[in-house]
Image (cartoon, rainbow, N blue to C red; front, side, top):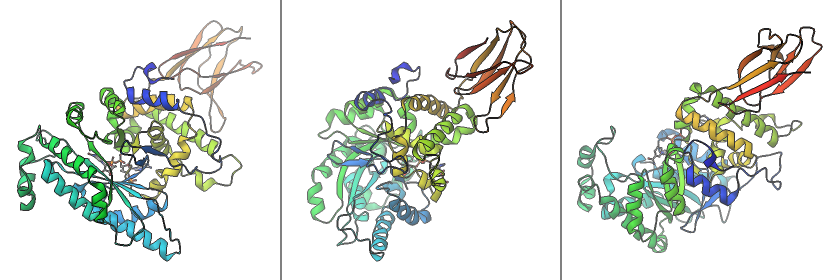
Length: 467
Ligand SMILES: NC(=O)c1ccc[n+]([C@@H]2O[C@H](COP(=O)([O-])OP(=O)(O)OC[C@H]3O[C@@H](n4cnc5c(N)ncnc54)[C@H](OP(=O)(O)O)[C@@H]3O)[C@@H](O)[C@H]2O)c1
């Protein structure tokens, strides 16, 4: 079902392109076993020639004390992409944690001659915009992300411009103060970018292009491989300015998950130039509002239950694994389904498991067209903080006798009375949810009629109770 059928501008052309290419929520792929999370690469082929994992982990704003353990644990659970930024001042910690992970494996006899590369997305802060300042920032990042000599592991660096400019109108940006606090070496490298807001980022892009073109040479000097270059938080106008003069167009765009749903023009431009969208704030934007949108959250919960049952058959002895797939996993799987990358941040080992690539991939492979249609509505509502309108169900009594209606609890199958007496010829109205079941009885319980709500949220449905 094309996204355009919906009244919401979400996903717009980005999704439209994805729908045409890969079909809409492909059903379960049979070659993956139904009894365990599927091993699936779930990668996106960047225009740079490198494929990037769709599911990663974010450590950009993770407390430094949590980073070594989070990186080691998540590498062990299959994560191969780590998001950070120069501003976060943790690139060295990430490289150390990767080296430690490999050392521990080696001690445990798990040596690998050709281990998977670890992708690290890092970003140039806005104080370092301009050609020479950007080159300096990139050199610092590459230096800190270097693994010990002799390591068989390779780090693939994706180098992004974090912001197009410093903007004093954004409350936490302090352009003048941040400039004043820079080390002299940075100030000497190039002019203050906040005094040249329209061109400094263009010069930075020229620097990233040069770095990308020189990547083989850099690697010969022992630096990590530059796998791609990109931007973050650029408006559509700034994107157009970059694209206008680019020798190499950005390979990655990192942006707020909000944009995926609310900026169809930007999504369209990215799709047109085959620029990979990597979304941050999936949980920040969507998850935190779930208490305000119980109907939308219930959709997510129902789909979580259905997908879990599809992956783990009833008789499977995997109860502890069931706990791994949660509403959060389904949320991530939905983005990934449309080739939008995710980089969730978590300091909780349980959440890290729920967000792990194999678990997200297994859920993605079990999403059906109906799930995707419902998720589009539910996630939009969660994001807006405005709940879906109930389904208005009318029971019209066309019998010769009075009736009463009961709701069937989907979990316990218990029947709970929800209507007063509905006399012949009259009707009773009930707010309900898609998929809910009701049963109508006459007072002597000689007549039993069962109904399933198949209308969508915001729609109405009439049930005739008749012989
Ligand atoms: N380019 C940019 O300008 C930009 C802007 C913002 C963020 N980022 C980057 O994006 C990455 C992700 O950070 P984010 O700010 O977008 O955070 P996020 O992943 O949207 O949200 C993190 C929050 O979600 C919770 N969470 C994580 N997994 C969960 C799960 N399975 N169930 C329930 N709650 C869960 C975490 O709590 P627990 O710790 O308890 O799990 C934490 O409170 C970071 O690397 C960050 O630096 C980039």
